[in-house]
Length: 405
Image (cartoon, rainbow, N blue to C red):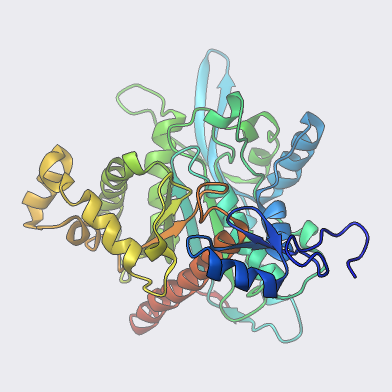
């Protein structure tokens, strides 16, 4: 007997229909198994549990008042960023660093009586062009970790404000500057993980800037000198200062890209700023790991969610490999170092390179929570594994980021 308010299985009509098929019909577990045997092209979709998780993860703020409140609350997570102040007729540009990182580490060391007084923080940074879904993705990883711990206070978790999907705001960055979030699962341990959400590239003034105006008052300020008589603009700040700073302090860089037609362009931009960062960094004994996330492209491949975890990486580089001969920037880089492949170019700046696929919600057979949530879980495990590998190299070279006594 199905409880009132719960949809019954569309086949037996006796048990709850809490599992979706890719055809959008709902079945009980037994009937779904039979349905999939009769329809081999169909696949299991999301369950009520994964649907609930995805609803919270991808939820948008619907009213102006709620949006303002969300951004005002999120302002406390600001780590560093550009601040432009008008003084008379002049514009003074400064880079402001808040105490966010030091406060998080201090709180981690005193989180519980078992928290070690000496810790080795690990930072994973999410970067990408505006509209690629960085905020949603970083929130996914942390929320899943939080849910795995059966925590009842998930609504109180500090998390990025989701970006708009429609309207004028969809073309603007959501995150302003660089925000830093804790990983609840490792907070208070010897290796606390933190996630940095960087302002999107090429997106103009972010939506957050309209609601977050107080944070520069509480940070250390560094004057940014004009270059060739011109004040540095927001676009240049994101693509030079922010990204280079994150490259130096991150164990893992997650580059988020959405449009499959722009994959090659994304790699070119990545190589440009990472090459400058790598070659101008002093005493960086361990290069960060790179994870390229194909976040909701309008293309899908069953192999990309299979047990062959390297399938997406192989297909991605096969698709863009010809660019090393077509693209002038890549061709010059390859010629300079006598590299033959794009992978060889990237491994000059990163200790490892991995490509991961997250399906587009609602797109064809893979775009459901039953596939998306496991793929995000797999990504979270990969980030942990890559960060640990980088920290092992740092430990061998005595270059671990250390806090405490």
